[in-house]
Image (cartoon, rainbow, N blue to C red):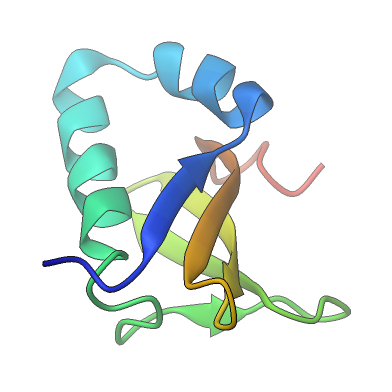
Length: 86
């Protein structure tokens, strides 16, 4: 049973559709694993943000927020490492 509910912003859904299918399956595995472990090893908190984290998957970055009270994870942005921070 998952501890956290995963929500994906509409803009992040559009970004996911642009990823090739081979990379997409690995990115989605990382996102789904967040339900059990919202702060896995290798995750970094973004500077200047309260509960925003960055997770790496190959050349892609997953930016997400954790709400421990509601037990929700909101995926804000997914993109290639050179473009995701813009």
